[in-house]
Image 1 (cartoon, rainbow, N blue to C red):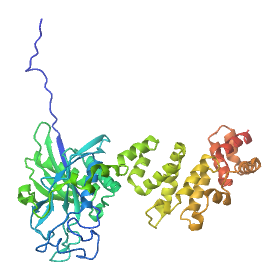
Image 2 (image 1 turned 135 degrees about the vertical axis):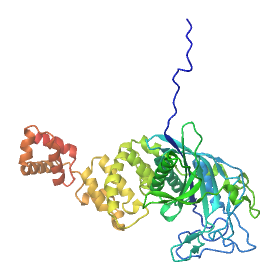
Image 3 (image 1 turned 180 degrees about the vertical axis):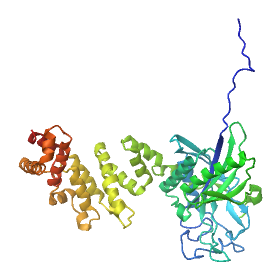
Image 4 (image 1 turned 60 degrees about the vertical axis):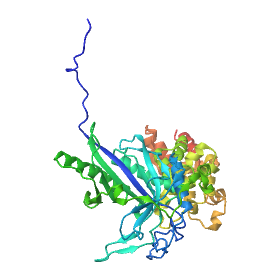
Length: 503
């Protein structure tokens, strides 16, 4: 008999009643160029003396005309290539019209209709540790605004040194769904910009600024009303603002209220967002093409040759991760060398000088422990780790361990000896210094036997306990032998000799 399902009684899948966050980011980065975006004034946003780097062009005097900064355009093209984006061949400049004292012209020169870069993607981890891709909407160029100060009294001060500095704006698709993912995207972008050397991307100095767009909705329902959170000065603050805003919108909707489209700030002291103003639409800015700047065809300008720019890109962070992981490095060590160029550059040099993979991995142990420990104690700041410890001497130490001429204890002592050495010390061979310090392993059986006798004599309790079955004490006695021998003994040889002496 044919059975027919009763469609009325069949269980239907239920949609989740949980709110789903929808998050997109807008990130502005000040670009590293010699001059401003549209004039020849020095690009130095950190200049302490106000209104030094200004001229009739960036101050919008009548009759002045802007000129394009090729380096700024190259920088954005490099970022686009690094994130596997689509590079537009045609672009033009638009005027974003609004009145505020930080814009002398009464409009900001930006790219609205034709951005330089479309799409692209960046791989990050979400809150659960899953690898996810954040896709990009666009990357475009614009000029920065002046810096305003409102805390000097009942008036405001404007410093135009920053006005006109090249500013890259990157907009993600609304594909981010938790605060950790958002923070990780910001950190990965910061690392990428620094790797490409297109921006210092220091958030504390305003060189990288994050704005969050966030809404919530339930599964199967349209997206909710978007709220923008501005002036977030760290990734931690961005993460906390997202977490608070998700909860605020959820409670507002559940209590019968409505989320309005607005711009909000975040108060780190209270951990809450607060309303600043009703959000403007693009129409409010009356965008139109800037008649003073030429339309740009990327393929017609030799300096913008994409093949040449791509060929000269440095090793990108993800490629470094794959490279270091293939060497068997721990995740935390991989991230140290990828994210901190101070150590990363040093390690890259070691990989060129040391070909044995076991010794390459061995060098990591000393860099992440002994050397990093010494750096933390330093009050002096240096840009290169090589300035603290000569890389050629360090490589020689690693090779001496490989040939069993230097023990681990001896290597640690050598790092301390060579640390911040003067010119004379840095010019010597590490092996010669180790011999002077008595750290080269001695192959003299009598020397070893005399030290073992001394150690056994000075540690009678441990000797008796070992003979009664506490075999773990053997390594304790090996350590004592190494200490007495000041690292000039092969630990494996010492261990075997101790076993014989303890019978």
